Length: 222
Image (cartoon, rainbow, N blue to C red):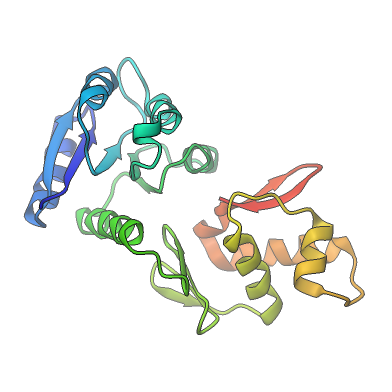
């Protein structure tokens, strides 16, 4: 049975471009040009996936995302944000509110389709040996990490730090927690954690934005 993908995008040309490429891959699509009409639709209907713009008339994309995550029926609806807003703040906020991925305009339609398929594949079958968050892949069997398909060279400690955060993504770890889990009995200072987090962010590039600092608390992976 074909999956139905809702596209909430006020620019008709972009919405139709997205729909064309998704339909070519075997999906059904339905287009909404404002948030109100989509929210009215989702009250009585279901879809399998949502491609969501942020800058919309009436209700903006972040408000739509909040509404979806607050309702039991749509709490786990896969959402890909597609927007021209490329700042780290917007990206982090969208992911924190529950988006599964974030793609910035201008975009490659082929990449968008690939991301949609990847999210649906993860939803259908979780592989415990693979942790995938957007462009970030952590292959636990081989102890390797990839960003956008490119393997990233990490030290043993950097890998263990990333894996620890990823296995409990969304959970906040204090520096003492991370010292205990990653370094064990080794005598190092809390400052060591900060240094390794900084190096890890640098190596991961854009995916490093998923490691969030909570001042006075510690770190989490979103």
